[in-house]
Image (cartoon, rainbow, N blue to C red; front, side, top):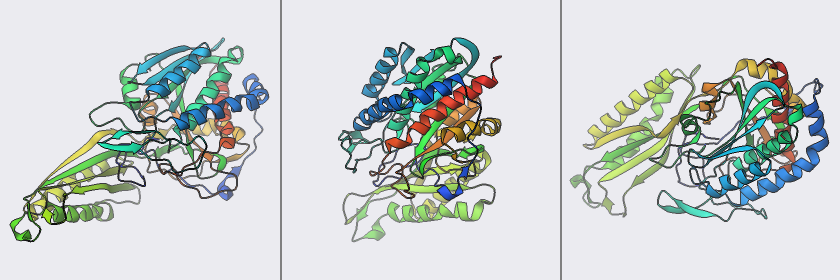
Length: 451
């Protein structure tokens, strides 16, 4: 997911969007709802095909997991995706937003155009699982050699979507309407100085044939095989900030000869937290300011000339975001002045993500599709996440529904989370993802046959 923050990594790397902490839902809170809904030819065909289909999905996921690539650099990933889609006989377009791939599945009956989105990039994380298909990939990131891992589960997103594509492409006789498959790069953020992700795909025109709806999914380790969705604001807006502080260098034995940027950085980092605790009414406007990177100096006995803070801002309201910008600038510049140094504050240094909003009517009308797909292991009573997702750009263009799929081992409540080196997706949970997309397509198209 694209959670625009300095990652919750077990390292010091920063990457614009954090696809990170999703919600944790206890199985006891799930609603084992009535899963009996009207069947359809698509659903009946899937029930006959699911075992063979999932063997392909698992094989694909293991491949993508073993060979992850970072945002805007998913060259081998997108090539492999395009080859699979081409083999399915689909209309495939590549090199969208650098490495994005789209394809159309044309139903044999009239109906709506439904967009289905999967993100394809990995993270700068060195994998520490003992999986036989664990990533051994490395690359250069922000001047450092780093491991690369699908630590947020995008390998599962790709594989599930390819499974959906495989199934629907063989069942166009039962498909009312068309499908736009979106395999989106750089959900975790484009490299600094580059555009990328959903916003760039839209800029390059993938919605010129405008969909009626867009559906997306994210895996989480919160619970086994359960599906969750929240109406309205579901994930926060996110942007990264950077504060550069310039002072005067001196020997560490004569600090009075310096204008110390390190001490200013300490004070600024601490004081930023008073914005949330003292300036914002958090009863209705939750917000987060987190510093994830502090850089200064090169030797223990030298007070450096400069220091830098970098972090993330999460909000659910644009007015609150504007207040945070004003307060951060005021605090940083005035504390710097008190230390006889200078500070500059830059926002959205890697871009920014809007709030991800689930269309309330879609959640109301198609929760039944997800309930059926998960055999009743479903919840809509979840809190909004302060993680962020650039699916929000798609959902700002057309009505969107974004749901979560639990992929931790059966009966495991707590497991290593997204964006950690130990994050594991259990293959047995992925069939609920395939079923969810197919059910959404079937039910939505049934309700919109006149489109």
